[in-house]
Figure 1 (cartoon, rainbow, N blue to C red):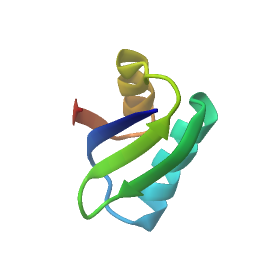
Figure 2 (figure 1 turned 180 degrees about the horizontal axis):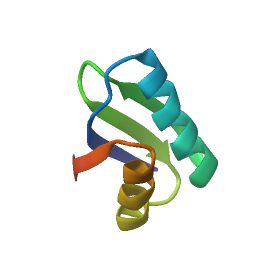
Figure 3 (figure 1 turned 90 degrees about the vertical axis):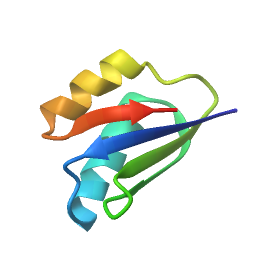
Length: 70
């Protein structure tokens, strides 16, 4: 089980959180994903590692920026 925390720049509200969660769910097999505009992060629980370069590109396409991850 992997926990990946993505620091996201540009999320401002609950709708932004929903867009980010939908993007992650649509493109990765995840157990759980939660986003927080207030904290500027998305936390992903998954069985496999997340393809970070690909995720960064997809996140940029919906108007946000992946600043860092751990």
